[in-house]
Length: 125
Image 1 (tube, helix red, strand yellow):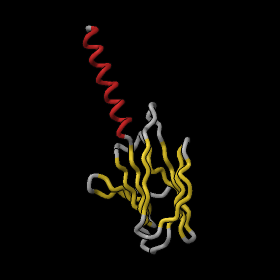
Image 2: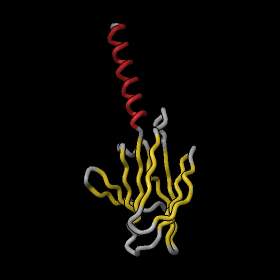
Image 3: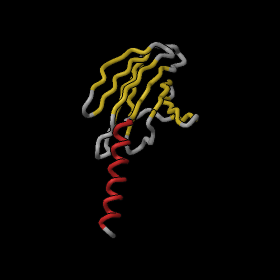
Image 4: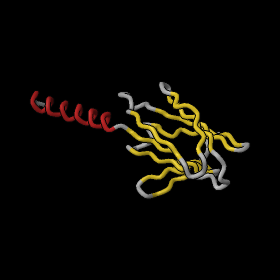
């Protein structure tokens, strides 16, 4: 392969990495508990602790971040209401192919809203 083509390929790869990292990822979490209970949420990654938040019914919060270079970014959250406590990985770079990851939290488990579809996930055991 000629050095000119190699340079062009490297430039394309670097541009893709730059665009991917500049745009970043936004994750949102909404309380859709049918019991209308407040939802206590605590989200973390290996590097960041977003703190504890209490979400009234139909309210939510979101945050933005950038995937790491090695594509191993993971954010996980605990969800508590009444006598329930559950955990779930709300963002795994190896699973989630989204720049906007929207989650609706229900008693049955997290619902991912993606491309105008709902995907039910089970709670982690």
